[in-house]
Image 1 (tube, helix red, strand yellow):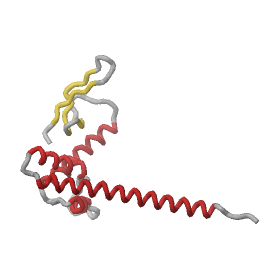
Image 2: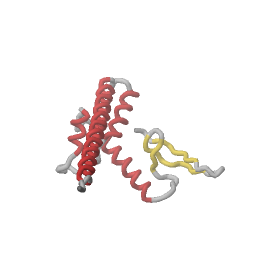
Image 3: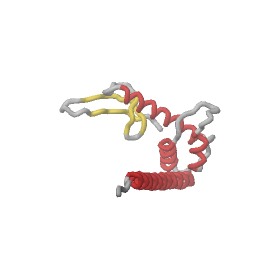
Image 4: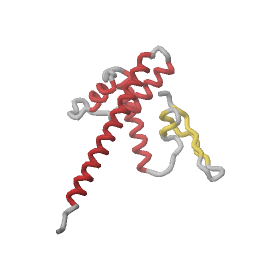
Length: 149
């Protein structure tokens, strides 16, 4: 007598995929919870300039895309609510605009190869302007001037 094992394999594979998806959701929730908690800690220490800058950088990293007013799939409201920040506050609005600038810079970079002096680049301290491109010893060295965050 022949026994069909394909159905069992498919059901088993489906269960594994569901378990992996649930683990991914738990991981994602953990990450967002930690980020939101960190923002709350930084927000409480807003009187220290360094902490205020860290708060703004963290918001920029987590900021949603820049949207048109009245967009039905508005993520700004949802993200701000999830992170526990005021979506109408200057730090969040500024973060959304800065993230938009970063996304544009990355998108433009992905469309062409190589750097050009004078273009906006992502630096160690944020967005900057490329001021020099050196290649003396065969290794590319890039010098950039950071813009204020």
